[in-house]
Length: 202
Image 1 (cartoon, rainbow, N blue to C red):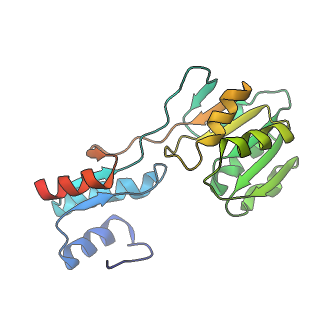
Image 2 (cartoon, rainbow, N blue to C red):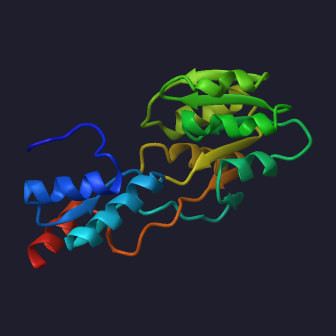
Image 3 (cartoon, helix red, strand yellow):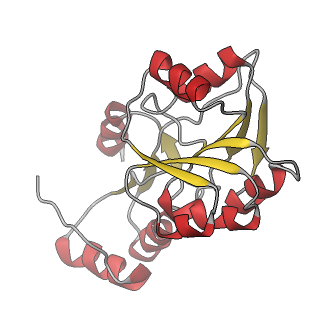
């Protein structure tokens, strides 16, 4: 399968690329929190007249026993942590860590695939480099050993990092859940087979 790595130069560059290469359909299969790329794809589809669909993981849903507080972004999550110092498992990706500089009085265990540049802004933070998928047993052990009181997570859907939500529920912990940004209006599907059916039918 032909692959392109790198950016397109915004909406205009993407639209030009789609036309020059003779594409017949456009599928947005980006991360649920990649709002700018999704907006660019939707706009490029309108400019080129291509059929457009979104392939995304369904977001996690609350279950009995969950103690979620849903917030729109990382800045709101930092504020919801409150005035009293808490022990926090922060699992929102390296690019969002800087938002928690507004709440430096908490003890953070920051789990990330790559080191966050903004980690120095959190004077009471420890870094744990790790990549999912994770297990419920492993997440439960981590939460207990680190004496975590609250988990901060993005609602990215999918099974790879959901184990921490199961573990938090089992331990009765609070979860501050950052909800994904709204997607552009489009046909939205949740598995590749459905996307193939959509392509065949349009």
